[in-house]
Length: 112
Image 1: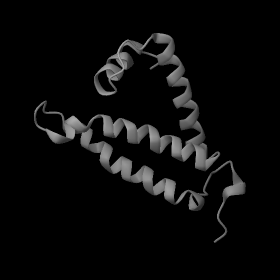
Image 2: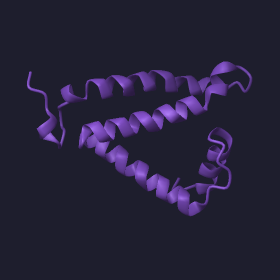
Image 3: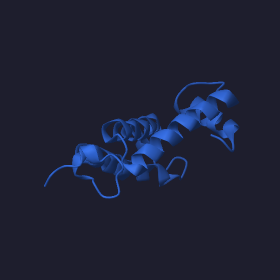
C-alpha cells in the first residue's frame, strides 16, 4: 500500500468491490494496518490487536472466495494458504491470554 498504491487500488476494486481507491486512502489504510500488525507482534493490547489481525485476514480470505470455488481456473492455488493462516489467527485470538512470551502488555498475562 505504501510502495505501490496503484496495486492496492486494483486489489480493492477486484476483491472488495471498492473502485477508485486513492493513493492517500491507500497510505492511510497501510498506516492503520501497520500499527495493528506492530501491536499484534509486540503483544500489546491483545484483545484489540489480535481481533484486528483476525478481522483483516478474515475479510481478505472471505473476499477471495471465488479462488476457492475454482482453484484451477487461473492456476493460482496460493489463495489456499489463507485458510490455515485464518485458523491460526482464530486460535491465537482464542488463546490470547496464554500467549505471554515477549509481550509488552503484562497485565493480560494468564497465571498458570
